[in-house]
Image 1 (tube, rainbow, N blue to C red):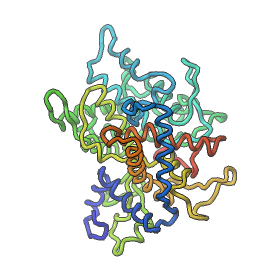
Image 2 (cartoon, one colour):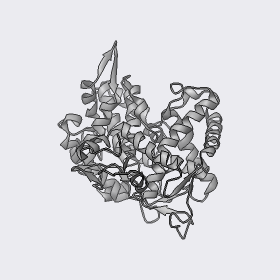
Image 3 (cartoon, helix red, strand yellow):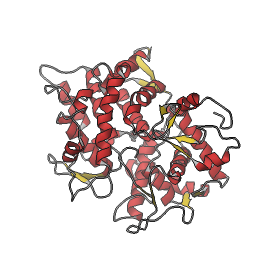
Image 4 (cartoon, rainbow, N blue to C red):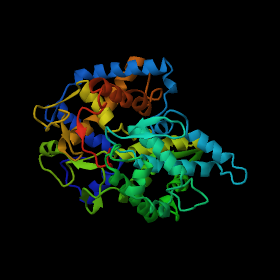
Length: 436
């Protein structure tokens, strides 16, 4: 989309909610970086090789040469932290003596779980942890949120049917409050969590969104009913059902749009995780409304990756168009780039936290927008360098596998090395529980 062309704002708004728009607009910011025209960051492309080498070392340490065994990046990994939880849950349903669900219903339940779990997966802060009573294991961050969400799901907190706890529906979500979410997440004065109100609000808003979009989620407002919508949008290739990724993306972007706090609207459309970039605006000779906006849709992308895995593993469906999906612009992937010197903050670009000495900003800050846009494109570039080093192509080592086995893990590991007290990111983001 030409940034200097006059296009109706409604068309721009629709475009900013598509998958291709993410890479295209982030690519514009990356081009500015190559020209030294970012406001907050300096770009050092020569350091990309160091990132790739660091990632390859991790991959070889964890997988030997069996890179095909790397699971795709998705919520499934976190739900299975320490021990398997998802597969035993499905097996438990399938073994029910009188009311065993068929494969589709098993997938619906799994999607129900994954949707609420992803929405609970914004940064929890450095101090919170969750202790699983059945195993005695303790988890923090994404793993802790994932394990906690499994137990919330099993307790029936999201279901309107007392006889069937293993579901999420609009009426059930009306029961979710900051108070019962805090109890389920073991939040206390001594175990504080960032953004508990934002998290509970997302789930409450999810119920309203499910009700408002029966074309995607059925008349009972259930996330798992997205299967029925996708089936209508699919074709059969022999016995394999083939589904366009664009259909799944549309259902999630349009169907879940009401859950996000209203921040930026264009032509009456609430855009979600889309932000203005002053650097981009300054580069456009004749700015047009909306042409300085950069879309990320991080939680929607994370959810899409997670649901693709359910559709492929549980139902054996095949998704096509996955090349339009991007890496996730969040603080682990982005932190890897900062910690290994691909991106450096310009002197005085952000204030520093007096306690930690680290730069900090709200997720809406233009510096964070630059950081996230650069992360999307850099993940593509790092993935290519990793494949080159290993002699693999994109079908042999997908971006989803790179995110799982290399960059996200790499961002976490370098953070532990550089900041062992907290393991937090090199730039602190003041999370409200609804973006990261």
